[in-house]
Image (cartoon, rainbow, N blue to C red; front, side, top):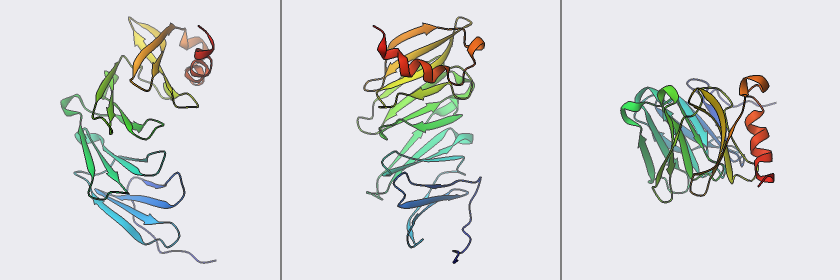
Length: 198
């Protein structure tokens, strides 16, 4: 059995692309993209600060690098190495960043879970979703990627809201006693069944 040389990485940020063709590793403020078959470096990107989180888009064409301390997200393109995008959440801060299923929208959760900002890479449009509940697994997408279910906290009550991912408008809000059922699975239950009812 043959092994490759050891590659440096920071914060255990090492991920294969969804199509399995690339391997991305982060070393402090650098993002290194390698070809899986040869392990040769294809791209080397330099971010503005140490990378806290890295995630591939669903089609393996873009890589998101979040720098939570600075409230920044940088996006890099594999097809067009000169293209890049910088998203600055400013003084409101950043605690989470993720792709939508289409790989063309980024969802950033601000500090203290004040809101989720949805950034479009195609149209440069920005949408805001208020009241996200501060919890793990409080957000999920439908299997087809058309709808987003979000656990929210409004007026001291828990809700699950359904948003349409085309334009991020609110479709439905349902009050629920999340503490009785547990949040894990509740959001999935709503997103899977919400469209079955008028």
